[in-house]
Image (cartoon, rainbow, N blue to C red; front, side, top):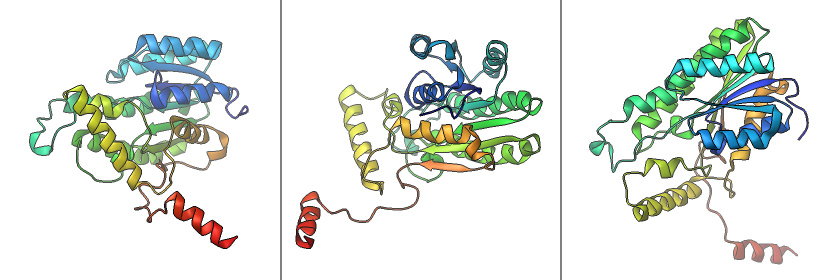
Length: 279
């Protein structure tokens, strides 16, 4: 790690835990000053304290655009500007047995956080950036927005909307030297699955989460599981000057999941046997 983001100011929503906290820590380590927004006040304040004077926290519900505006204002007032925003905050919605059992009771909340929050964050940050030399906007989608599949239909629809909005905003904001890119994580261990299972018993939720993780591992070409730090690395790339000619890009950080099914993997015993035969 170095000073890739030295002198830059960033806002990261949903920054108190999971992918967001990994981004916050990495951005600060790279020299950025960061304003963290999240609904979890305790976790957000604790993270800002750990990061030191380079981070500030403000309790924020991104479903309310006015609260996102307060984050942008805080960055400008306290750190002197805004060069980067990571619209990371998102929720999964409730897991149902199938779409036939989904009452869409959480539709408006999921869409307000996952779609309106991203759209408002993009607009509010871009208004400042367009008048101050440009900047980088990074929106978080998911492989669920790239690949079709069963389950959490509203979540999938919201993440697909983020991708299309990102590309559209990139076209419109390019004239202001504001870059808009998207990260689509997949198979990254966070508590999102657990939060989708709140209507189940703890035992059933644990079994479901374990089964889904196993399925994800089987569908991923790379043999190792991804980490929040892998996503943070992608965010640093989009935030910094190395990506100055990239906009409207969707980067899948998913171990190859969206590229296609993995080939049959050899067992460790088979691999060792093959190596011994060659020696």
